[in-house]
Length: 372
Ligand code: GN1
Ligand code: MG
Image (tube, rainbow, N blue to C red; front, top):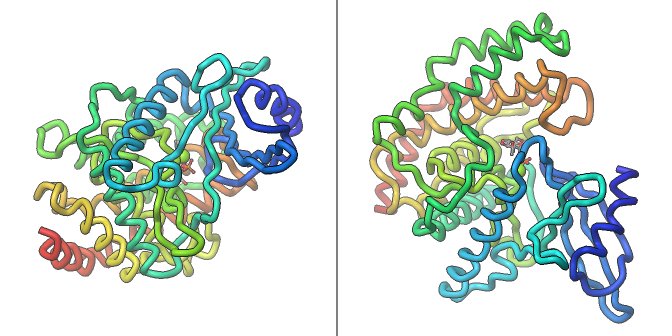
């Protein structure tokens, strides 16, 4: 952090910002990159930007990553304009460096990018009312629609096999056998639970292989705090965190959004009794999502919506468990058991989705009729 503060002046001098740097605030946004809000002033006016240090051990090729982001945001910008919207608010506007690169590599080798700060908005780590779930569902559905004719061939895979659940299980196998942090004995129950669900892991990858599910341009990280809400209207108006926009499944986006946006607490809630799937939030999110994406989805996609919520939750739990076993090298953690706590909420949610699945399927059946 301290070294980041020193280097931020160097970074700032390499972007065409207006004014002098006045203030730097670190934010707790996301578990991967480091995110700061910069305030600059020209004496009369303040200008705000978001500055991010790209986690290059996760995103190993910053050129490809930023190529995707510049192209996707440029494409979204045009679409939003054609739609009569405001691209300055409805998508992110990244700046090129003074030497015309989409990111700056500092003297220590770190990679930085920046976009203009969007004001009068907020994000939610979990959703407290159905209207917000509904609006975030509509925002992610719209996002998929806006990118439906994006040339998929031009997208780099920024993290290969990101939602390949069988490969996530293989990484768990390795973590168990290497036991790098010496924690394997203490998480026997979690390992047993993960293994008892292994059969589910390949259902979607099999359907991709057999050509039964269409590969689309998807967001792939539809955590509910990746949607901006307007402070005045409370509308969900912008989807952020575009690092994993890649070829994927609509089901990845739906499932991951339910995992994080239709629960009764945050993903790191320690009291599992407080962490459940909220059926009302599920219905509200699904309604919002299908209102935008319903027409585009195939039968096979619709058939697997509820399953995807379970699978994406299971996958995320497996990833947290793997990172816990590896000694917390991937996700940011605030305390030693943090990844284990997150793994437990995810596994609890898997069980809860299974218990409620008949009710959830009935909701999907009802809503798909409304939007077809
Ligand atoms: C990470 O960066 P953030 O917090 O939006 C992760 C997601 C996980 C999520 C779990 C690139 O997302 O896949 O679902 O944490 N992103 C990456 O909270 O691994
Ligand atoms: Mg992210």
